[in-house]
Length: 113
Image 1: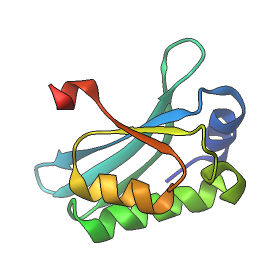
Image 2 (image 1 turned 180 degrees about the horizontal axis):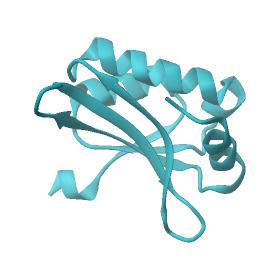
Image 3 (image 1 turned 120 degrees about the vertical axis):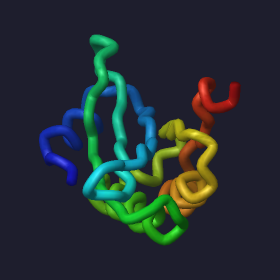
């Protein structure tokens, strides 16, 4: 799910960098919550998109990133000055490289530690 106002606000006013991360859901409903957030001009967390998938694998992460690429549009997704920060998850990393091949991909300092 991505709200149009959040996408347009990010593309027009935020830094050209966003974070992709997944968190495992527990309880009655299992799965993985994938989220994409950025920092706005006030250094506050700015939501861009999220999705719930069954597990963290190549197929689901690739599907999520392709959907994100589609809502951003080709002109934005092909930017060379776009920076995408992720944890060290191999499925998320592969999906980012497939959907945003021209972007700079970096790892979160916390996860490198």
